[in-house]
Image 1 (spheres, rainbow, N blue to C red):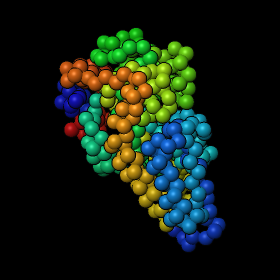
Image 2 (image 1 turned 30 degrees about the vertical axis):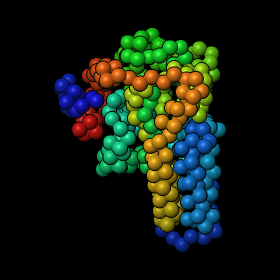
Image 3 (image 1 turned 120 degrees about the vertical axis):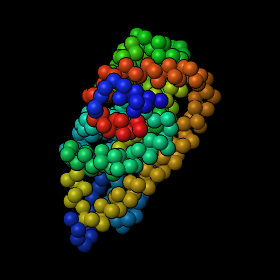
Image 4 (image 1 turned 60 degrees about the horizontal axis):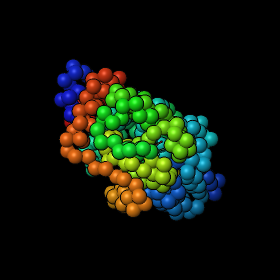
Length: 324
Ligand code: PAF
């Protein structure tokens, strides 16, 4: 994995009251994840616990499948109070709070447990608290998972195989910069439009955790997969700040504890879902390739020039602290 040493090598320095029937609210919670996926199972638990904890005064309506728009649009809608909640990938959210960009660097985390340790530390809390400046209260770190490649035509094994490949990415500057640095042609497209883009040959491939690729049926057009695990992608459960602060302390506590329960559920389901979905993809005729140790090392090494060019663009001290 990329280490803090590798970064250093480039010389980088781096309201409380009594609840009444008048306190009834509806929380519209939009997301782009398919209904039934692990995240939406977590969000449904959140809705149940909020209804139970407030004796039905607060209702959470979950809108999956991009019904209310793409991730960027829903972050804006949550900021402006058009909807109350959303849960985007940290990558897209970093367009609203640059300090989060440190999580967009490839090959930072070896496994989800290490990622959770960092996200649940003081550093992770501090980064969530910073979102208040953007009109958002962050209730916690959910999880998309490790991102892998899926191509329409032929298996990718090493970074050189990406030369000239049109790869759908999120609108995430650091992701785009990494793919460009290894010769690919990253093409940002909003998630709800990716299926058609793959089918029509606008892009040659896409990268996402297996579950999200599969449930959005992207593994139909893009059925050559490679387990690159190039980025661990957390999501953030967000609620409109003004709305949250207008709630009683008791209701805020119910919301926070329901979000904690949802995150626990998501993380626990994610432990096994990737392997289960991978098996389903294979059973349906998809090819899933594991990297040899040398191939994985080649991917990690491919990120070193990217770190050299981009580490100074982010909070280098935070990046180093995460790597350490
Ligand atoms: O690829 C994306 O756009 C994101 O990973 C997704 C699926 C919307 C989840 O945040």
